[in-house]
Amino acid sequence: MDPLTIGMFALLAVLVFVTWRNSRKRKAAAEEQKAQLQPGVEVMTSFGVYGTLKAIDTVANEAQLEIAKNVVIKIHPGAITKVITEDNSGGPKSVEEAMAIATAEQEAREAELNVDHAIPAGDPQFGERIETPAKKPARKAPAKKTAE
Picture (cartoon, rainbow, N blue to C red):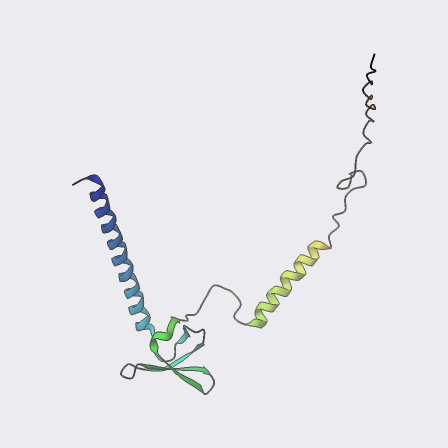
């Protein structure tokens, strides 16, 4: 066999291996999500609707999702893309809390802007010349040649 054929087979083997490994990861992630789907858990659907899972019927292939108080919709369980877990990252948990943080940051920026950052009188402003440049001597016009 020539080296080109061996290289092509090696490349094919690498591609098959990567595809097989990625499919195993996707399958494991789907099984993990399926295990997390219990009634009462917060979920997000593929079309962006957030709600609380009320029931899953595997025979009819339906899931009941409560999106507001006493508002329940029926969806396909495959439309559930993500199980929402509690995020303990220390971020704001409500709009009011986020607005309070943003207001405090804005006040801190404004306090920094109110500090006097004036340029001392001796320093030149941007674009201002420090000293006047010496005048260049005028160019002499070339002497005109006269026809003799």
